[in-house]
Amino acid sequence: MQLPNQVSIEATLGWNTLIEGCILSTDQREPPMRISTHRLLSFVLASFFATNGALAQKQLAQSPRILSAKTVYFKNQTGSDKIGKKALAQLRKWGKFQIVSDRKKADLMFLLSADPFRGGNIILSGGQTGSIDNSGHIEEDSVPNYNKQAPTRYAYLAVIDTKTGENLWSDKHRWGGLLTGFNSVGEHLIKELQKQTSK
Figure 1 (cartoon, rainbow, N blue to C red):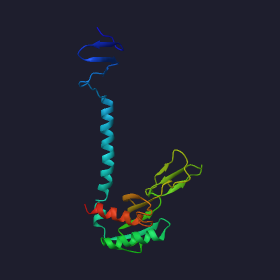
Figure 2: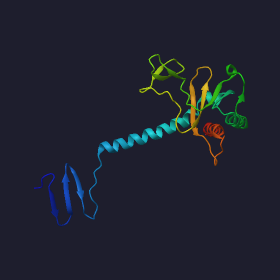
Figure 3: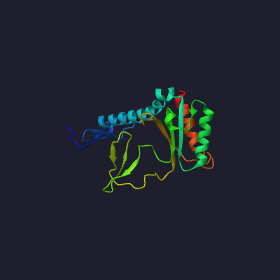
Figure 4: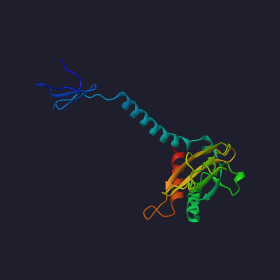
């Protein structure tokens, strides 16, 4: 009889140790393998959510409102005129939308910015920070954050329905450098939207 946590020597199987239901073996043949059901389930769920999030971003670019829109209003809030001009040039080159100068006459607004589109950042009367969406719902930050810009610079492109204020699609891209082009971040985001809508 073998008790848990006791080491036994078996001539044919080598050294085996039983520790709380797990078998560890020094045998050169195939050791028995037991995978925790909890770990397997965690791995499967993590894989599902990681893939599902990536697929959801791709599917949002297939929104019927994006695909059926005819006119867009382009707004550059990156703080760089060169980035905005290159993005606007790429949008014109794409040719899918007529670009209008009045937001009220546009089906969609393309917002190119240095911050993600969340409806707006606010500071409440008690000093707490948060954000407000287009429907007026306020979400407080768990810890006040007075510097909302990420340390690594990204540009964000949001496609917004001008009638409802709903964010139909958004993506981010790291600001360019010597190899990718210093002012090409907006152009890359427009190309990504074009690629996703043509699939």
